[in-house]
Picture 1 (cartoon, protein in one colour):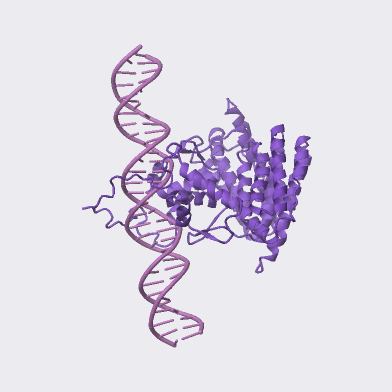
Picture 2 (cartoon, rainbow over the protein chains, first blue to last red):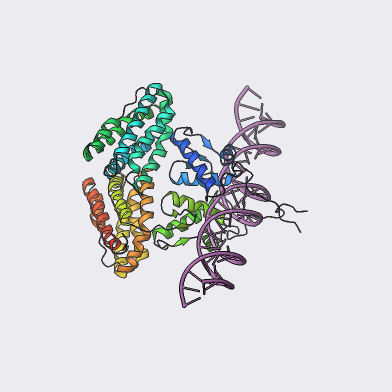
Length: 237
Length: 237
DNA sequence: CGTGTCATTTTGTGATCACAAAATTGCGGC
DNA sequence: GCCGCAATTTTGTGATCACAAAATGACACG
């Protein structure tokens, strides 16, 4: 009675009858979950992440998790060590320096490219997001702050319709976000400064150089706080 | 005759006794094969690539192929369409413009960063590669040319020890290489010009601005040929 | 009490399977 | 002869399995 290949529904987990349609729905869900977790700092640098662990946590089989982890490793959001284990890479001064440089090269460029596509409605949305950011800073909600800050920047960048630069910038954010979170957890959010209002004004006036300057300044301001911390926390250099 | 879960060797394919050791050896093999295939233009833009097809072609199970395809899709070297099919993305004027811009932003930067690490031995290697490139141009061997051109650039970039910028540039090359190949197949290699010799001289003299200029010029030269073609071959714009 | 070694458990990997959606083919009707 | 619909094949997806390597824990020995 080898009854093993009979009556295999193959979807005992979670999705009961919710997602009968779209192709690769489970993977998309898993991908979104982990990505958002990385961007809001729910994954700690250096912490190992196991396939089976994540799978059972998300209520799916290990299979989609495997693929998503590979994807994220390809984007350098995760690191596969020589033994196959996957972990959130921890920040080094060199890495930090490179991420900062790359952001300064790419993000102002893409912002400028998006400038002509940004509508009055976008300005309104950005203003709302920035207001929420301000309240997060005072309330000290680091996780919400990170999510909103990401939303602010990528609402601008996404307007460019970019297919090349945007994924590159995405990869960069995934790389520094987890480290960012640990810093905010340590020093709080009250010291945060940004140049979002300058950016909004530049968009309103369709002033490309001013927008570039605002984005550059925002990056420098935001990463400045992180840069000081990283030197403190890497004793062995 | 239920005997299904007994005597499963689980490795009937290819690796007989060659790779009993390293973790994830098969995946690495598959990854290298497909990557190299993309960089030398053995995959044609627009052409669909199937998991099972590649798997049987490489003599492995679909599993490692799936993961590698996901990786490459994450690097934008491949495109997953809404129905799940994977194909080599074809070039559009917008994409081309973005890749060019991104290359010009990132590659000179990384070249300069690598400058201080490049030894006399590296210069020797680069000279050898460039000589081979010259002979490929006259002999018209596009595939070898592409492989050597990649080797030339990345021999420089790799010296930087970069962990962030290098993967970004890697992604960019994977994106335009397949298109590049189709152009060379159409117009030949005789029209190719590069600024490799200027780059080598700049490295010899540790002249950062000159190296940046050489890399920038080389990118502009190399992509210039492609740029003219893409406008011709996208009638629908 | 510390350390090296062995057994156990965890974990990644590759393979195979069953199913659904998509693509392809074949056939009938107009 | 051409178009639309149904049957068939192809293909991606998620699940489960078996195995090996690595990590972990237990235990004996010094």
